[in-house]
Image 1 (cartoon, rainbow, N blue to C red):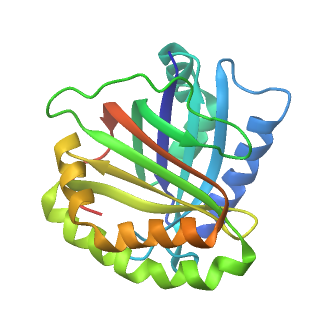
Image 2: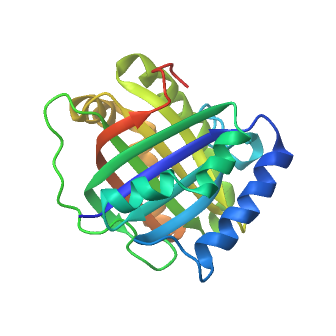
Length: 230
């Protein structure tokens, strides 16, 4: 059973985050990769009100990783790398979850394993999106960001909790993470999200993305987050 974790650290400073990001990247792609690690990306973030690279949040950093088991994920969380992040951070959130549905690729790979989980009634769910935007489509994609962000802002009172944009180098590799109170809250949002729907149609018609991914998860645990809307 593949377990996916999302860490969010609030370092409060760009220098602390950049230094730890380099250390994290070296570990996760090097020969001393943690046991049981299937996939990992260390990411910068953007404010949830924009999801735009122009509004990058240099005080918050995210790690998305997939593990062969819960035991492997928990062992990593007890290790030195996470301890280093925790020691330099004023905020720390960890979300542990299993994929309900995952469509597409990330860096040429299917990152989250078999998508066969189910969310119980009232169980939190999460969504990860990620896309590699073609240079020719950047301007058109950017134009969709403000209305989509406005829809998410309104959803804060209707089941949306934690939400932030994610990005990796080089430019044009963008994504989002959102945490919802329940599957019904997410479905209600999607039914009324006209800007989201229009952007999806336009992106398909215009072939905006060289690679894209959509994944929905059943959330088993959330640590370090008080429930304050972000």
